[in-house]
Image (cartoon, rainbow, N blue to C red):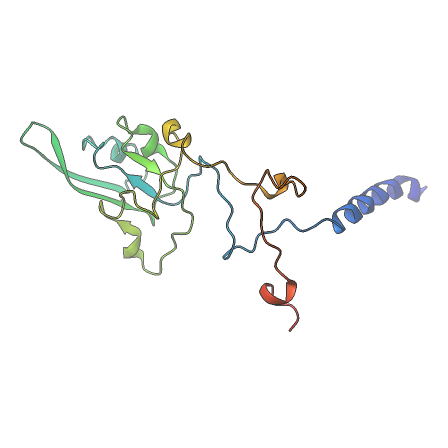
Length: 183
């Protein structure tokens, strides 16, 4: 009676285990190989476009923790000129409310997720450090125009070996070299 109760479930589980045992691995050797992340990722960085910013401080008002500091003065054409724009990314929870609140699309979430620092003062970013560059690219979170220009996310399970298309192709790394096994 016990085999009837538990035996079928154990047999199904073992069949599934053996099916996955003989498949090629779909893991990534992370520091050497990186996948293309989702277009709408809320990475742990913000990208500020100074040409679009009017200094209205809507982003600072919408931040629930008050991590955005904006100092402006009135310019010659009766507009605001941004003197100081700082974001404390160490305290920021990357909720994206500031990005959604900006009426001029001057603030965007970034694609990067590797922004760890050893000192807290390095996490306070000034307006020069927030501008777009080669390493600081905006994501498509709440920005459909930017999302249309970004590459599609790569998933290893979508890779078709015969046609060589779908996800992202990764090289096979032997166990002894990268994973620390063997000599």
